[in-house]
Length: 118
Image 1 (tube, rainbow, N blue to C red):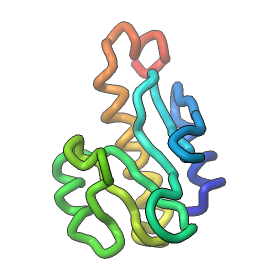
Image 2: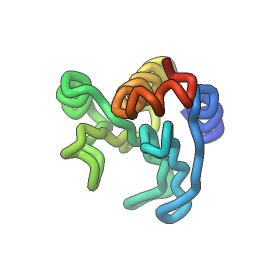
Image 3: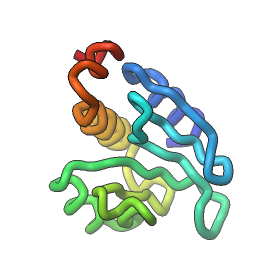
C-alpha cells in the first residue's frame, strides 16, 4: 500500500482525523487517539506503516518477515511494517480497521456516541 491509498483508507473510517507531525509523519486518530501512522523514521526513504494490534495479532505479526515491534509503541502492542509489501493491501486494510476499532472502544461511551461510533 502506498501512502495515498493509506491516507484515503484511514480517512474513510468513521470519525477520523489526520495530522502531520513527528518529522512529516501522517498520523491518523479517532477521538484524538492515534490508531495508525505512516512515517519515514529510520534508514531509507520507504514509508513505514505502524498500527495498534490486538495481543494475538501482535504476537503473530512480529514473527513475520518485514514486521517488527513499533519503536516507542511496542509496549502498547503496535507493530511497524519495515518493508514494502510485508502485508498485502487487503490484510493491511483489515489490520488498520481493527486498530481503529480497538482505539474507538477505549473512548468513553459518551465520546463514542458523539462521534457516531455507536
